[in-house]
Image 1 (tube, rainbow, N blue to C red):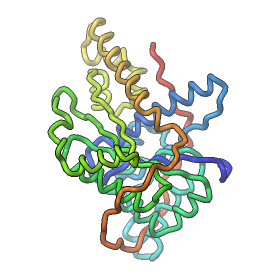
Image 2: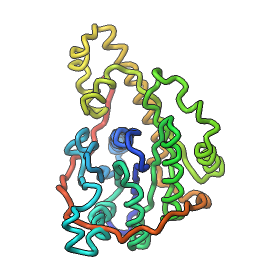
Image 3: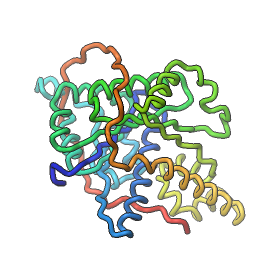
Length: 314
C-alpha cells in the first residue's frame, strides 16, 4: 500500500443515467493513463499503475478490460445481508475506500450508483479520512446530447461538490456517441438550462470540461460491438479488417482514422492526470430528501492487475 501521506487522486466516473458511455470513457481514461505512464517510465520517472474499480451490476468495464480491473462490486448488497445486519448497507462500500488508499485510482460507477456512493460518503467518515490520507477526488460527470443526460450531469456535479467541497474537482465529459449519424450533436441543446448552468460553472473556473469526439473508424465500431478495449482493437486491427472484408487501402484508412482519434483523445485527457488543486467556490448544492441508512455485503472478487498497456503506432 502507498504511504498514507503520498498524494493520491481518486477519479470517479458517474451520473445516474445509464446508456451514456461511462464504461467506455473509463476504458479511454485507463488507456490514456497507461500511455502517460509508459512515457514517464521511459524518461526515468516513477509512476505507479492505475488502480481500477467498478461498482456495477452489469460489470461492463470488466467485460471489456478483464484482468485490468482490480476490484468489482455489485451496485448493492443482498437483501438478506441487510435484514441480518443494520450496518450492512452503511459498510457495503467500505472495501472501495481501502482500494482508494492504495494509489491513484479510477472508479466506474454504473447506472444509479452515483447517488448511493455519495450518500455513503456523507453518512460515513470518508471525507475526513480521505483528507488525512491525502486523497483528492475528481468526478467525471458524463453527458451525451440528451436533455435528461444533461440534467443528470448537473445534479451529479452539484451533489458531489455538496458532499466533498474543496476535496473534489468536477469535470464535465461531453461524450459524442453518434457523430456523423447525428451531426448536430450538442448544438440543439445550447439553450438547455442544465447545460447553461454547467457552462456557467466552467466559465467561473469551478468546473473542467473534456470533449470526447466520435470515432469514425469501422475498426472501433467493430470493437464496441464485440466488447473490445481500444488496445484490443489496435492490436487486432488486421483480424478485424478481415472480419469486415476491408481491402488493404480501406484497412489503412480506417487505421489512420483510429490513430488520429486516439491522439486527440489522449491530448484532451492529459490535463486530468495533473495533481489538481481544488477549484474555486463550489456550485450551489441541490436540495435532496434525506437518504435512508446506508449499506454492506461481502465484497466481490479482487483481481490484482498488470500495469496498463501503451498503445503504440505500428
